[in-house]
Length: 81
Length: 147
Image (cartoon, rainbow over all chains, first blue to last red):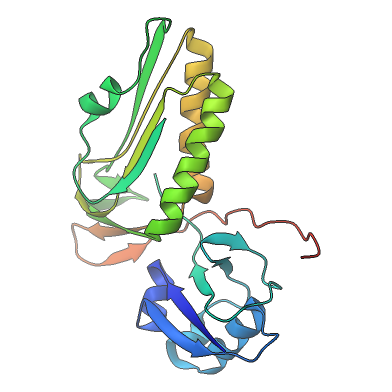
């Protein structure tokens, strides 16, 4: 199944893109997705092991199980204001 | 109650105009402004990145929570994103209420919650050249609920 991945701030620079479509296995979690990304190496390898994630625009736990079509965002610590 | 994220310059007077009611004896306007220095370095400007859809939802949630504290619906908050120069307004918060105590509390609540959980990121650009993403705060993540 496919999910849509979004990157922001520093992570957008590490990923070299703001958006990516990826194929994940059924039963995949946000954590397993991050592990697979990091295993790509390069800038992806510099993403943290346990980043803050949002699933479908809400903060979510890393053990959240993903569904086809989910929007998963990797969020650096926030710095608005 | 109103909240938004925009790349357009914010108009503080217009935002203050949006609050107020005959029973209100206090109105407050808070402005966050890009300053010319940080950590001993001279800042030329900043760039805000945002997860716009989620930031709009979180900002609306923060405004609603502040309104509940205030006991009125007179809460307006806007956050600017994109490229800003020194002296420009990055965030504007207007609140009004019958008495000042609730207004100060609600205004403070909005800016503190923005710092804690609004999905927005700031890159500082320096007069001497170079730029860096600022260290931010780790937003609270939901507790396990077994879902």
